[in-house]
Length: 197
Image (cartoon, rainbow, N blue to C red; front, side, top):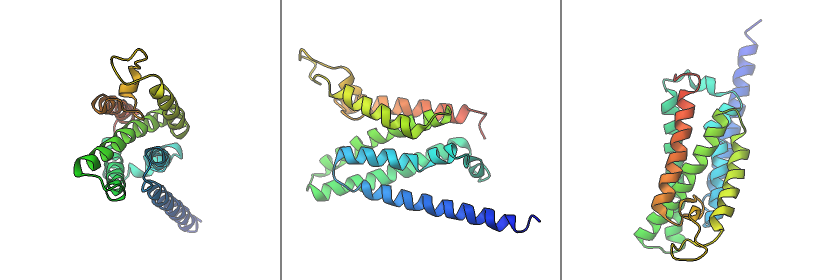
């Protein structure tokens, strides 16, 4: 009786795997559009198709059968995303004919956004909420708060949050530290929840 069930189960998993691969490829193509705002949208979509999706749909348990710990799964997903972001952001150098330094700054700016968005989506998904929705809500809130006032310390309408905002990035160093902190909290929550595998 169990013999026909196995192929149908494998067929279902294979179909889901193809769908996920198609989503990742499509969302990666969005990242080639030379606009930071479009890239942020692409990052949100891409993050939602990765480990966040497996946790949300309860497919992550299958990944634990692989010889990877939770720590490794989190970091490998993040490294894969950083690689995709770096390659697609490098296209700006060609499109805008940027110098090497300008090209590196474009890549860093996009990676900062990735760290924060990946961290937000993983943190909320780990805590049992919809990481995709929360990453949209918090990214919009970050953009609105970051755009208030000025990034100039001497201005009357100086907005301190604009310096650490991962969308505004008034200070790339502070924005990077803020985004890395969000990502670290997500890593800690994911690795520690239910014990590390």
